[in-house]
Image (tube, rainbow, N blue to C red; front, side, top):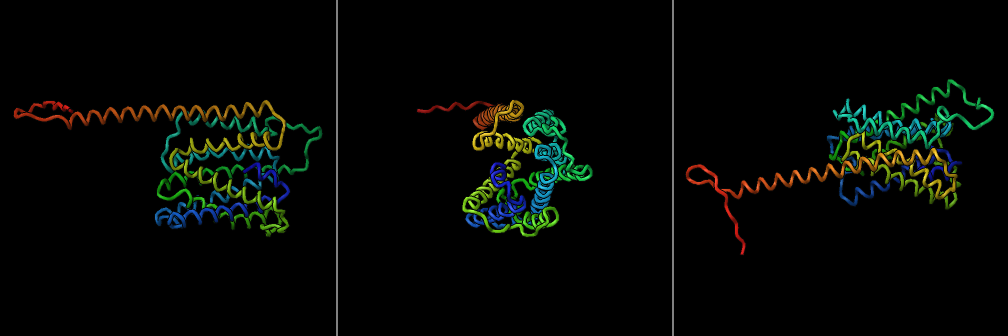
Length: 322
């Protein structure tokens, strides 16, 4: 989706979120209608669903505020501080444990993001003349707001964990899209100086195709994220979202023909390497659990195939098949 946003860089970012939300709402309602499910979700989790949508929408507005004020690499890096926030909130709100592997993953993924994004506070700037166009106070506010947005996204992800499998991942996407609409109007009016989030409607046919693809990609990303967090801990699940920046870099190389950078390649290898490592551990753990379950089943079968004689002693029953 980041590639599509970059292809429409001249369009108000809140306008992009507006159309993305409309497409998400349409697909979600269509899917739920086809499945025969209530779009509002089960009564017992509707408050959590609303909180997931609200905090997710606030996070988006904070993220775009950071993009408008900060250098893009800095804003991207701050956005991907969500996993540590999500892990910390999950410990407090859900009672999940933050394992040593999660700590290693947080360090690895955040380091990978920094290597790819090249934040100016770490790599400096290539400009010969320092950029004095950003007011220091406004820059500090943007850093605080963007970091706060990452924390809000962490709370949204923990809400998904609390909902669990009691509501469909599609319902969560619907809540997120629906609650993003008012937040987009508010953010655009206050930050971009216009309430016309629908734009000037002078889009070309190519622009409309890109907006549609952006909505589809946004829906798919949210659906997979919700589905993953329903199955995995917040610490591991949110770390997986760091691969977004990897795919963005790969798509930029493929479609925009941007230059290959050694630091970005190292960051890509670091993030993907950790994800492959976690996947290998999950596969081995799953096989081990399956073997233990098979052994337990065999023991239970042996007991069922045993009889007790008159003295109370157990005798094995031999089954012969002709």
